[in-house]
Image 1 (cartoon, rainbow over the protein chains, first blue to last red):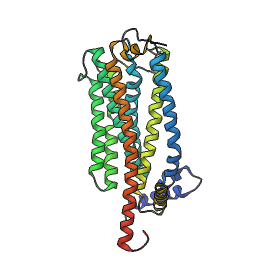
Image 2 (spheres, one colour; image 1 turned 30 degrees about the vertical axis):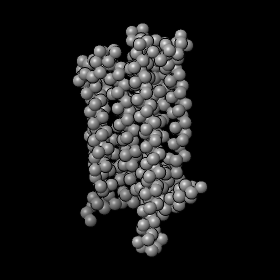
Image 3 (cartoon, rainbow over the protein chains, first blue to last red; image 1 turned 120 degrees about the vertical axis):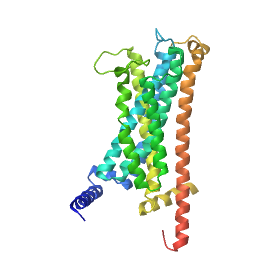
Image 4 (cartoon, chains in turn yellow, red; image 1 turned 45 degrees about the vertical axis):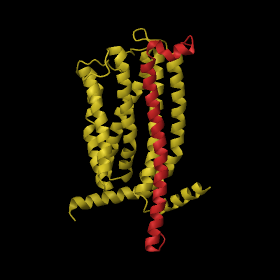
Length: 271
Length: 63
């Protein structure tokens, strides 16, 4: 064993030790500890998402006024912008967990990346779909190959590529690392999407919300969009937590605690 | 309130197809995701129970 391998092993042991320590937050990096925590948290995030979505839809359809330029069709924005934000944000979160997985060698990080990918892909599709339906009456076309739309389409392919790649490789450890690499490299596309409307002349309008200048839209529209964005965010957290629980069961099936959990689930199903 | 009647609401100023096409497909996708999430979990639990039972039969010892 050379010096690098020794150092790596010591580091790994350190991580495992910290995961076992009952008072350290590191313990939640252990799948066994995170599984029940995710189960407790997910319903709360789902409930918050539902309440926010109902409030956002009410404000968006019954309180927000007709847009002076676009008429009623602008109401697509309350879905389109949150979906586009989430599709970019979740890809960055996937890349983050990929980096954590590569550096710390924590299994749960890779599982989190897996759990986020389908939801991110759905948000990405929703952003493209609503964008096309919004573009037709406002620009006169469903699709143009401009920088914003093309880079968002590339994000869709990155999501699909991640899903295909991680499912095609049978060895989970290799699938984890290959997927993480794709997520990390692909995340370069996210700032390109975000700044595309600034860097290139695009048909797509500029950023709806900016920290550096006064909002370009009415306060009620902005508030509604932010409420819908939080709804989308909490929904994504809830779904990812539920999905990671199933993944943990599969990956940890050889352990005693999953055997006990399966007994509990089997008993519950018989009731 | 923005709307004079429900039919005006559904019409969305003549843009009903685009607005409801956006919201309809998006919420259908979200409903599908939740459905498949639930179904996958059930399937995985059933598969793991079968896997464990098979292992128990093979080795004759407690898996």
